[in-house]
Each structure stands twice: as C-alpha cells, then as structure tokens.
Figure 1 (cartoon, rainbow, N blue to C red):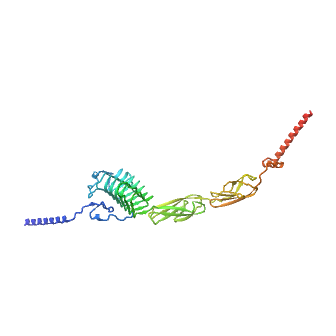
Figure 2: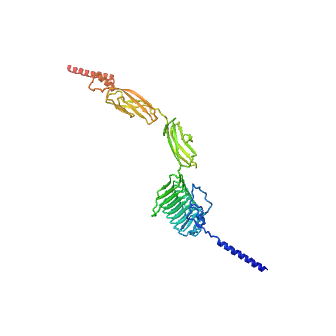
Length: 494
C-alpha cells in the first residue's frame, strides 16, 4: 500500500515539473542592452521595450543635486581595450554588456581623476564624483570611442571637468560640472557627440569649449554663470557635414557671452538666454556745487525679472531706494556713488560714478595797468587783479577802440589819443559773472626835439630827479666857474 502511494506521489511531482518547464520556456527572454541612441533617459541600461521611448524632451534650468554616498578610490587610468585591469570595472566591453565604472568617489592627485586611453570597446562611466583641486582634469578620454559619461559630479579641477582628444561616438549626459578653474568641458578633434542634460556652472572661462569637431548635438543643457557658455571653433575634418546642433539649451548669466559661434553650418534653435545683470548711471552733471541738486537715473538690464531692489549709496551716509532720484551735497569733496540692483535670484549688479562737489565761488572783476602815463603806439599791459570764481574762468576785454581780447592778461596798443573806457567781464564755470570798467587817457606821442627849460624840469621830475637837487647842482657849477675866473685874474695881476 505504501509502495503505491509513493508511486502516485512521484508521478504527480514529475507531472508538475514538466508543466512548469513548458511554462518557463514559453516566457519571452528580454535581455538588457545599452541604449546608445537615447540621450535623456536617466538609465542607460534598459530593456528592449524601453529603447522605443523618445530620446529627447524639453528642459529648462536643471537643478544641482547632491552626490550620493560613494565608495572611495584613487585615480583610475585605463590603457587599451581591457578595462578589467582596474578593480572596480564590471562588464565585458561589448555593446550588450559594456564595461562599467560606477558609484565611486575619486580621491588622491594626478593628471586625471579618470583617464581612458586608446580604447574602442563599449564603456560607461556612471555616478562618479571627482571633487578635488588635486586633479588637472576630472575625466580625460584620448583616442577612444563608444563611451558614455553619465550622472557624474565633477568640481574644482585645475583645468577641465571633462576633456577629450581625438574621440568619437561619445555620449555625455546628466553630469554636473561646476567651479572649474578653466573650462567645464574641452573637446578637440572629435566627432559624433551627444551632449545633453548636463549642468555647466561657474567655470572661469568656458562652460563648454568645442574645437575642430564635427557632427555634434548639444541639447537641453544648462550653462550658468561661466565667462562664456558655449564656444565653438571651426572643424578641420574633410567630411561632408560639419553640422553642430545647439538646441533647447538654457544659458543664464554667462558673463561675457552666451554662445560664441565660429563653426561651420551651426544650427542654433530654441536656446534660452538670460544675460547677467548690467547697470548704468546717468547724472545731470558730474561736477556740482554745495547746495545744488543733482539728478541720478539708473538703467538696469539682464538678470531674472522682476527686480527686487534698487539702492543708491551717495557716499555721504545718504541712500535712496528709487530707480531715479535726486540728491544735494552740503560739503565739498569727491564722492563715489554706487547704484545696485538685486534680481529675482538675489544676484546683484552695480555701477559706480564719481561726483566732484565744490563751493560755489563768486567771481569779482578788477584789473590794473602797467604804466601811469599812456601814449599812442606804446604797449599797455592789462592785468586781472579780481577774485576768482569756480574754475575754469572766462575773460572778455573791451578796449573801447573796437578791439577786444579773451586772454587773462592781454597787451594792447592804442593808435589814436583819447579817453577810452576799458570794460572787463569775467564768467566762471557755474555761470556767475562780474563786470568792471575804467577810463584810460591816452596822450599823443612826445616830440623829443622840443626841449625847453620847463620841459627839462618836467622830464627830470618825471624821471625821478628832485627839482631841489637840480638847483643845488646849478649853484655848485656856477661857484666853480666863478672861482676859476677869479684865480685866473689873480695870476694876471701878479
């Protein structure tokens, strides 16, 4: 009896196994494959069903994410097609089973954080962090192809976040590259690239620099606060197409320019460009006087609207929050005015203007002449002796004979005798003016042959000789002559 029960149990178990085997064989076998054509899906290893999804989707500014906790590793260098020389590599290098370097944080120092040289097998560098100023380049590819760089966080590299040289069939997507000392990415002498959904932020020079390349797609990336967002240089390859497509990128507040295009057959479509904040100042005048009102106007542009704040700082402790305002300085000096604008992201742009403030000096016209007696055909020098106003000053002389001058201290010659009214008008920089007039008698020219005793006495007096001295001189001369004659008579008598 027990034997029969055992036989029945065995037969039933065998029947279950056969049925289960047929069911298992009938299930389709979906093998995993690497999606080399899709650029924007977050997973690169997908089922064949997932490969039918659209590769592109629209994108605004991407947000920086915090790298996940990773295992630590020193720098990695791979030469040739055998990646398994590195202890963290998985896969076999085929299209269906690519080599994978994933989930590590690169530490240490050297030329490259991760370097791949002379490789044409399929490989993926995924979810790696290189956040160190000890490396010249974060990831470096040379003479290589069929590589995907995805979901990596690269910062603080000395030269470039990603740098490639003589490469082709490369995908770079969903990476965050920031605070690079030169450029976020440099690609040279390469072709067939898909660069998508990356963030290039705050590189000292370029977000992405593409030199002598062809057949590039740059799509749905964010370039934020680099000196230049995208820089394209011309291709040199002898190919039928050099087309680089720059589509649906978000370029915000790149300092010098968003895109510099020196390429051939470049396609630029639907790129969003937000310029950095720029501000300008205009003033009613750069040089003002104490107590005088001066008007200020601000002209902001760029940045993310709406603007949240305007601020004027007048360098004397006073401020204003209006876009256009006025101010009065009460003390002389040189003031540095600062106008700043804060946009919707709290970024600030500013402009500076120097204002020179002086006392308002009032001019007073007056003058003197070089002689005390004036004759025709003789030079007469007029000298300004009045009070200066605010410089520069202007001088207007009217000599009363139809002639004039704008010199400060002019020289003039009268041709006819007479009484002339000299008028001097002075005007300072502030427009304050003053006028002074004097009458000048001009005499005929003296005849030198008309020499009488009266003229001699007059001339001697004019030339500075005293009449008393002249009389004494005459008496002494007469006494000498008389004495001489007396002596002569005495001699004759003897």
